[in-house]
Length: 296
Ligand SMILES: Cc1cc2nc3c(=O)[nH]c(=O)nc-3n(C[C@H](O)[C@H](O)[C@H](O)COP(=O)(O)OP(=O)(O)OC[C@H]3O[C@@H](n4cnc5c(N)ncnc54)[C@H](O)[C@@H]3O)c2cc1C
Image (cartoon, rainbow, N blue to C red; front, side, top):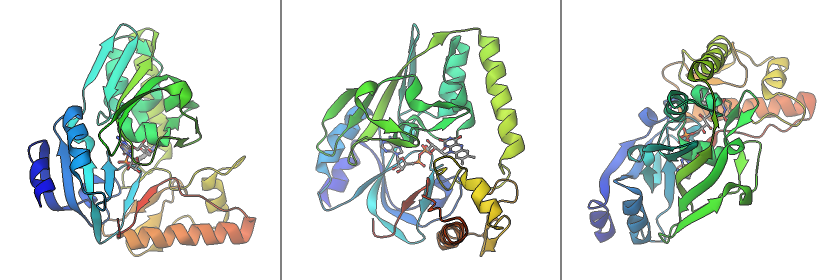
């Protein structure tokens, strides 16, 4: 395949790559092809070379991702190599593969506040943008000034954040867009005070979430005016196991991998929670976790 050969000059390419170790919950099959672009420019050159019939999927840290057990018949673009972070005055510019925790630490080191909540979220800037990730009353778009993405045709698009409709765990970024860079406007603050806020948030997370076991964060979005965890707990599902997966006993909106879970086990627990909550309370829970089906 000539297009695949061409991609080897723009980054690294591998075939049949297991995806479970690249997700935080640690389940799932493998990618037909995995491409790790060497730079944003290389990604822009690579995308138009991929035949239109080959689906392209983007992988950040895999912390909000459930990958099906078989083959993901797609070119999976691993953003891990694009992780540059620059600070210019009170502006911070981060590439999409940079981890949000590292971005928060670098902002703190420069005495720049506003991104403390990112210290508690294990994903990347790209995943955070697409999900409008948030915690402790703050969300990704609060300080976002501008986002840059590359489309399947290789076009580089720069958008003012105010022009991108967004809401709770949602941002209207085109389906074929690969986010490559985000620019944030931050506030000057005392570095010690910023670090203390980050520590307090992390401590709270340690107490309330089952962080000792592999998981994918909140499985469901909170329905308006309520909490998915409260509904799942009230339905008596805490501790329910299917195969190697379990609804966490500590936080009912988390599914944990007991060590030998499959994606099918996790999917079955998701379906069971949806059925039970719907039957008892008439509420349809909507997954927050993104699911990659086998076909693509
Ligand atoms: C322990 C734990 C705690 C968590 N706490 C929170 C929390 O407090 N708040 C919160 O909002 N989330 C939380 N999450 C979920 C997750 O960390 C966030 O949703 C995060 O933003 C996902 O980023 P990622 O890089 O891991 O994305 P991935 O899981 O790799 O991908 C998620 C989706 O984004 C797409 N994507 C990723 N990168 C790009 C890109 N560059 N361009 C286009 N699309 C892209 C993927 O294709 C996929 O559809 C938590 C997860 C865990 C495991």
